Image 1 (tube, rainbow, N blue to C red):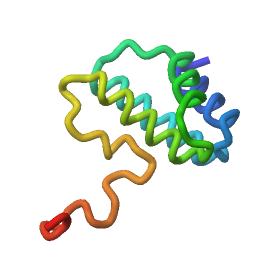
Image 2 (image 1 turned 120 degrees about the vertical axis):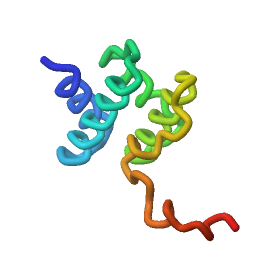
Image 3 (image 1 turned 60 degrees about the vertical axis):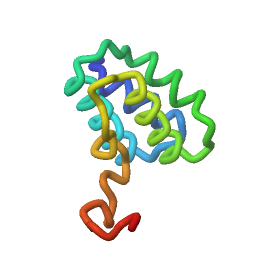
Length: 96
């Protein structure tokens, strides 16, 4: 079984519906590839299970932030999160 398939299965076990599990698995696989990190599928499953949130979407986004914190070159992990950049990401007035 591929990394993505294994991760998607663990996300479904953690409460994600099939579509969300697949999307999240694709994004964490892209993060893994883009930053060339050694990230076994079992570690992803363990981290999402230990997330401080019961809701899968929050647990997954926490997972991405946790992974990004360990990567010096990652300064913005929003593209790998389920919500992506969000509606206000390009708004220059955001936060002003």
